[in-house]
Image (cartoon, rainbow, N blue to C red; front, side, top):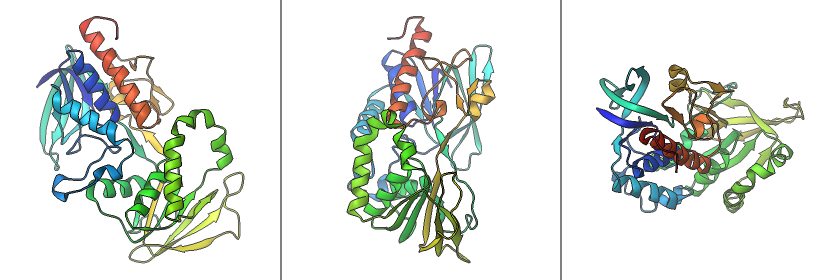
Length: 336
């Protein structure tokens, strides 16, 4: 199978990149390990579940509809259920080595002149006593269950950790009928205020989540953390405690919160395995790119969370820029 541009990852960045390049006459193949396009952010319930209002589970539904309809109307070849485990440089471009299907047993090769990495990020969880108990899930895992399966992980939940993902997870669970005992955020609100200019564009979205928390009367504990999960065969509760200015647990502040679910997450990290395998330079933990999303490896672009965690809106913009740049390179013209 041959293509001009192979886009790896069908989340916001990958979708935007594929559509931008395709609109400029490039043969594009979009490859993703999931069974459906959209990534974690635009994860959809299976059609057989008969969701009547799937848009209620999403922020930015109209953007997803535009991307979905553009993909359906265009000439992008979409390969879902293809797990890319290696990208190899060849004399005439690149070879994607993929494994097809849920069992990942059937090898499939995709040969491309250029590659665009939109591999997203993965969730970080800091371990604590009891974190392996049944009933303890990642915040992203709880969100995936709700978005993709229309199921909730339990009846009474605590959402804990740090990072912007906690807000939509807590409000989503509460809206689905779960009693959210607390949203436990370890960050200092004053520290967040220092980044106000960067967060300004997120204010309407954040305000919507805040209203949801108030509507469902979800207690919010800032500068707190989970110090232990309790239970024998499964989770029965957690102990949370306050943190001092240095991030240490303050003695004597522990309290017990009964729950059957703990959704924990401590931020996101970029997925860089494929980029590192190709020899792309990293900037800290993320793939280093220039203003056109080009890596330092000729013929390789990167966009979205792989180049730094910035959210769906930034990923869409970076994907579009990368798709335009890759198309210009293939046509031998300036990006436009």
